[in-house]
Length: 96
Image (cartoon, rainbow, N blue to C red; front, side, top):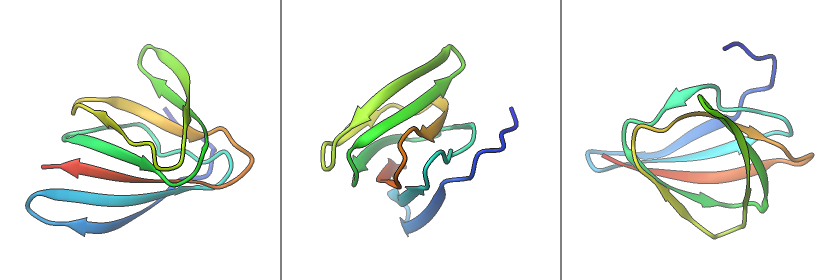
């Protein structure tokens, strides 16, 4: 599943034997690319806005609010797209 969208920019802040903490920065229209999570994880939005979540079943839109975290189990396969006309940022914490 190729795309011509710009890529979101991950910066790994911590990677040890217990967690991986990554800051994700999405320019307008940017995407993560298709990936599957191998660990349970928490997302902490640093921006309020709307993300387009593409899954194998289609896609949904999710509105995130600054500082309002959410949790997901491992095994999620998706592509995350910034559906805003401004940069969107979140911190992802994966539990090993």
